[in-house]
Image (cartoon, rainbow, N blue to C red):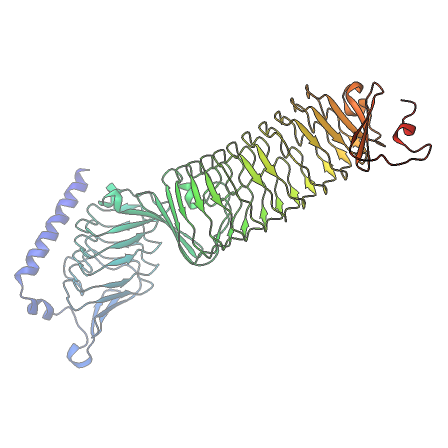
Length: 541
C-alpha cells in the first residue's frame, strides 16, 4: 500500500510538473522541437518519428498513424503526439500491444482514436487532457487502464469498457464530468474503481445483432435490428440483472421477443414494445410479478406458451386481432386479470391458458375457436359467465374445474366428449344440458358440483367415467333420453332419481322410477301404432 501511494504521488507530481513545463515554453517553440523527424513537413506535409520498434506518422490532415509491432514505450510528456494541437485523429495499427504512459497527453484537438484488438494495456495519463475527445471504445483484449489515463477529458461523453479490464488506476476518469461509462456484462469494476458516480455507469451486452443496455435507474434498452434470440430460463441479459430491471424499452427495428427474455424479472413494471415486433416467445414475461399492464402492438401474430404466466398483478392486456392461437399457460396465474377479449381470429385456446385467473369474471369464446385445452379456465374462482361459440368441438379435461362461481354453461352441439374432471368442483352450477352429439363423459366430470340439481343426458352417451357425479349432494334428477344404455351403476347415482324422457314432437314424456309417466308441452298428441308409443316401449315399468 505504501509503495502504491508513493507511485501515485510521483505520478501526480509528474502531471503537475508536465503541465508547468509545457506552460513555460511558447507554443511555437513546442511545435518546432525536433522529435527525430526523418522527413521534412515542409517538403511532404508528413512528419515521421521512429520510436524504437514503432513508427509514428502525422499527415497534413491531422491524422497520426502508429505502426509496427510490440509495446509502445512509456513517455513523460515527450512523445511525438504529446501537446500537439494539430492532431485530430489517431490510428493505432494492429500489432501494437500497448499504449504508453503520457502517449497522447494534452492532444487537445484529438476527436477520434482507433485502438486495435492487439492492445492489452493503456498507460498512465495516456490521454490526459484530450478535451475534444467525445467517445472511445476499449478493445476486448485490454486488461488494464492506468492512473489518470483519461483525466480531464472534459468532452468525453461515452466510453465502453469490456469485461476483460480487471485493473483501473486511480482517478482514471477524474474531471470527465459528462462521461457515461458502458461496462460490458461480467465486468467486476465499480464506481469506486472507475472514479465516477454510479448513476453514470451502464451495463451492456452484445447479443448477436442486438445490444442490451442497463442504466443505473433500472431502464433496460434493447437496440439493433432483427430477431431477438431465444434464451433458457436463467441466461438472458435481463434475468441476470432481474433485481435491477424495472423498465424495458425495445427500440424500432427489433422483430421478435425471444423465449424467456424477461423471465422472473420481478421488479419490471413497464415495457415498451414497438410496431414491427411480430412474435413474443415462450415464457417471455414469465413471473414478471410487478407488471400491471402491457400493450401488445398490432403487428404481433404469435404469443408463445407461458408468455405471461405468473404475472400476478397484471390487470389488463389487449391481444391483437392478428393472433390466431392462445398457447398453453399463456396467462396462467394472472390472478389480477379482470377481463380479457379473445380476438375473432383465434382458433384454439391451449392447456391451462387462463388457469387460476382468479379475478376474471366473464369470458366470451369467439366463433372461430374450435378447441379449449385441458384446465384452460380451471380455478378461475370469480368466473360467473362464459359464452362458448358453436364452433367449439373439443373441451379438454378439467377445462372449468374449480370455477365455483359459474352458475350455468351451454355446451356447444359439436362437442362429442366431456373429459375427465371438466366441471369438477363447479359448486355454483345448478343445471346443465349435455348436447345430443356427446358420446362419452369422463371420470369426475361433474364431481363436487354440490348444488347441481338436474342434468339431461342424451342417448348418444355410450360411456361414462367413474365418479362422474360423485359429491353432487343436491342432484335430484338425472334425465336419460329413451334408448340410453346407462344405468344407475354406470352413473354412480341412486336409481330413484333417474328419469327417462322422450321428445315427441311438441310434447315431452317423462317416466320416473316409481312408474309415474308425465306428459308435458302444448298441442295435440300424435297418433301411434300399437307398439311404438313411449308407454308401449316401457310397458313393463
